[in-house]
Length: 255
Length: 224
Length: 51
Image 1 (tube, one colour):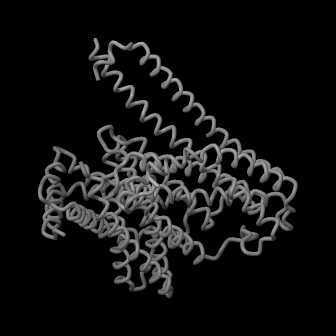
Image 2 (image 1 turned 180 degrees about the vertical axis):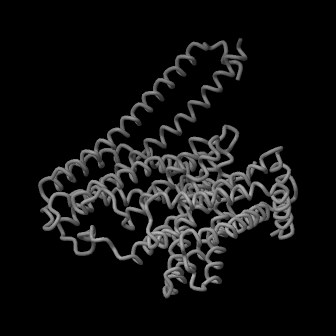
Image 3 (image 1 turned 90 degrees about the horizontal axis):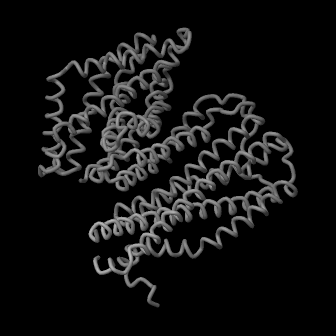
């Protein structure tokens, strides 16, 4: 078993390459599975799952809103782990993993916010309320927007990867504290009456739970596919840049 | 950790700032002005003022800090002073601790002027809870200075430095601002000491976590 | 009904928009790779001797 790492040391130092190759091998499977499960989700949401008694149609937004919110945490978890591994190992793949996960994760935070607002309007009567979850999602959006801005605006002489890794780590560590503080902030005050109902949680009927879980799988697959595709593109762009530089040098010396 | 090195950096920053006291003075004026502009955001009755007061105090400090941190770090970039510090045999953590302590002292100095003015303008009655107020102010300021110093170093490495600093700093400071505003509110309303202690302990936890994380991670920010 | 359809429409529009962006990046990468292949071919065997 030549692919089996001989030691922990070797395991960690080859983990990025191994992960990358596994991702590439799984990419077509993940892509087709994503399309398939999403078709199933469409069927379940549009024809199968019964209407919720109180909310009616708007409740169906739940099946894309909750998975988006779930994905954003998964994505920023990937950013956090990859950033730590980058600072430790300093191999470019870890930086690419973090960069692409942040980009696609930011897309899903935006989706979670927008679908949340479109759900809030018919149910709460307003697009936006300073409810604990909405507020902390908005702050998360700002944190990772800042992370992407650091990447975009880093000075040419600065080490972008290192800088971004540090921001990714500190930002992620702040998330649970922000959650806690925003929750306290909202619960110590009397809640306005715009919140007619709570999010459906524990007492979810089986049909809704099945639809939600299928959607969770489908959206996770979409996220993973997009992430792999972006990682592959970034890696390929780096390799191309290397080859171009090499070729430039060869042509200059041939002249 | 090099306590003496950190102390030397703090002393150097204080001496520099005392030589041009007008900068700190300008920042005090700026912070007070922000607190004043808040009143124009509505047509506040005395009750509104008392409800807004603690929040307005913290937002003014937030803005003053965001301007200050960038300046306090930028003075190290001038004439490559930072390179000088980096080649000196000073632990990176000590360097951060020195800058952090300096920022805390400056912010506390601004508060000395800002807090009495805000209390008067917003008609806040502290009900004798001066010790609790000072404790809250100090705790929140320490945490905010840690984050501010840290992200000033990050933002200095981007082309949009001064613009990017608040964008990075404000979202991450939300727990501190909530602790300051809500804890202050609990004091002003009186009889909500339980809430006050909850918010204070949140701010203390924040200080411990981010004081440690920023001190450890600073090395990676300024590494050349 | 409107809100629910609007949310799904926005969700898919945003995802497809992003996917289009990814596809256009892909297109640029392919073009770069093709240009590189052409340059390699034009370079000819004579210049291979020099690294």
